[in-house]
Figure 1 (tube, rainbow, N blue to C red):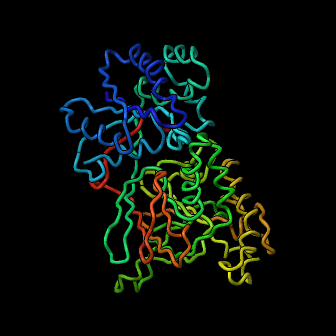
Figure 2: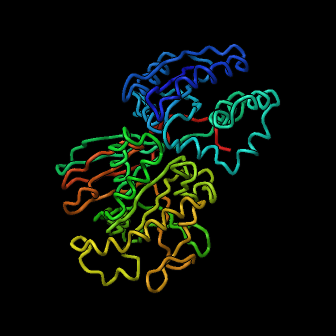
Figure 3: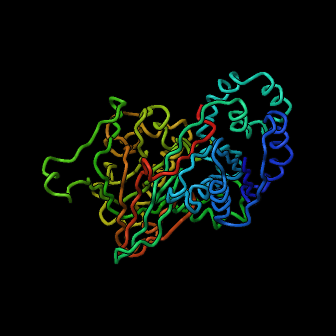
Length: 416
């Protein structure tokens, strides 16, 4: 087993937790498991360590990688040399030890509402060991216990995000495993990074949200067929296919959604971005079965009935100021077990719990393209698993779900 420790992640306590708690637990229950402990020394190093390990691993047992860090550390593993391009064909299993700030993937794999059920199925000797730890420490051991209990792993999806310049040249190509976002969420992550030194904990994201909530992004989004749209009245997804004329016209193989956007993101492998912030709840409450999709959630203020006569929103800050409390109410719904998905506008623009004219548009897609317009800086940001990149004027960004041999064959201990 390769153990990758990011000593700089979160509050920087993860390395000590690994050495004093996790490794002894593995020694007691790992049946002579051989462990190779490595510390990262900078951005991208986790991916290099994982790649070196997989290249040197012989045939026989499936290689196992334990990752202590946050979602960015897991993201680095997906982007390791040869892993991102899937030229390393080795299947690998991952164990997560959450030591980051938000730990979206870990909390999605082990949601609070199902932890007791998971613990109740563990072997008695593992439960007895777990009882010896303080509750806060024990909550970080679920993936380790999942592994030690020989439970099945869950396959991980991934997407490739490509930033393209005005001349059509590729500027960045990055694999993601948690979230790709623009608009408000990307702005929050951009501002939160500036706050990291002063506010190392999760509170910096709420501060960043307060500073960014009044920003909208003017952009067109192309959604590639086929895709699904969630209908809150039936609580089902409906399949969208290209119109008949698209068969003879390749330019019609997408559907265009025009801005402005207050919020736009897609997720894979997760239904939340923090333990309680369940932003794409249908990923788990209305799962797709064997098909693979990205969960897409967007908020376009033009759906607000009070916005129809608002005029020039870019030149009128009062319009955005008026929408800001609604946006906060919507985001608070994500903290209420994903209640925002069923929020709707009243005839006058108030937000109510209804099934008509929903505030949120929720889709399942396999490819989308974001085409920012104008000079708004926030419209030219894209966040990929916490990494914020700039889209140049005249450029665009495309996110594509990876399938088959294009994606890394990685699975994780978790998914209860």
